[in-house]
Image 1 (cartoon, one colour):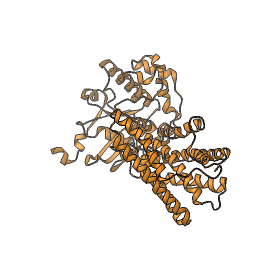
Image 2 (spheres, rainbow over the protein chains, first blue to last red; image 1 turned 90 degrees about the horizontal axis):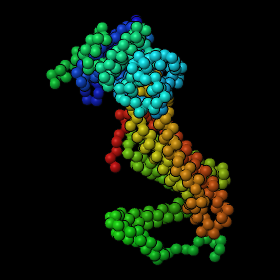
Image 3 (cartoon, rainbow over the protein chains, first blue to last red; image 1 turned 60 degrees about the horizontal axis):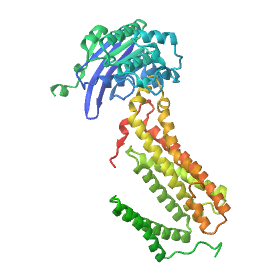
Image 4 (cartoon, rainbow over the protein chains, first blue to last red; image 1 turned 180 degrees about the horizontal axis):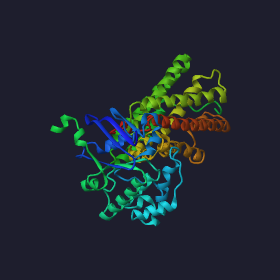
Length: 219
Length: 268
């Protein structure tokens, strides 16, 4: 079985079931768009796929390998969640990009020429590398967070509103950058409020409204 | 009188000493701090608690039974465990038990190492040595444990997004929690490091002062104090480490998830 497979997932927050019997499949080199009304569990779904929270039921696998059989950090190295709000660690942008490369499950080295190329691709100044990451604008931080996630070479990127803090030109730059990631064989699950963006990026779409328990539909 | 102990105090002398507290009361009235009532209650508590302890200690020494002794040690440790958690502005289910278990382990191990191995008291659980020493160990290590616990819960609560971000990028729970854990132990150890640094220069420790008042050779008193400081340093650092590891195992699971929802705010 090729790609990311999510099957029969039921998940909720205390006192409320968000999704029932949810399933998705994302093959290598493809993008799946996730839409749904606010509070329908888009973020919780991505966190659940990344194993950052538990589900009430369901199974997850990548290229036929079950998540339960994998060391969770190794799973997350391959199926990587990027939250809506970019979080920068103390230190320079370069420190931030290098941080995950120091984890035992990742273990890599920063490819500087490629990093610089990516920075300009994302309309960021190469001089940012030595700047204090927390002094960057929210939009800059959001793009650095995307680069940081891609630097660990995941198979699947789980992107939660990846361009929410960006102006139109930067949105375009991020979409082009993402296109290159996909062309390189990566796949992505994207949550976005921007229907046009989902239209542009994702060949397949799933609406969480279709998986909400009946009782919630009425309310 | 030299060498035969301090001059005895009667209740009249205690009454005169109470006049000193009135000075504090005067300051409160003068600056309208409205602390008079609290001060009165605190003074009364000091008197009652200490007198009570005096009678209890006298009784325990007279009975001289290991059962009674270990009962007293258990109560002291439980009270310290409660106090360590009570000051915290956040808690989680099992925090009190964890603090208690940590203090039992580190407090008893260090205290009995001192009485049994270093001082060589016969028997190693001789109440006259064990109770005051454990009291000093608990009093100090509970401060450290409480600081470590409070700081760690605050860090994990406030930095849950940061911790989760690192987990999402493939960090193990150890790698993601490393900074808050380290910071927590460091915070807990600062008070004892500070007091070890200034001891003898800024402060004369109570125990040493007491022994000197009793007419003991100052060098002997100093040697005891050194042992006590080292004992407290060991108990505090082990206690901070213990409580930090306990929090870690309670708030991170084997699926490398942060269970931040287990942290509850406490309104003090």
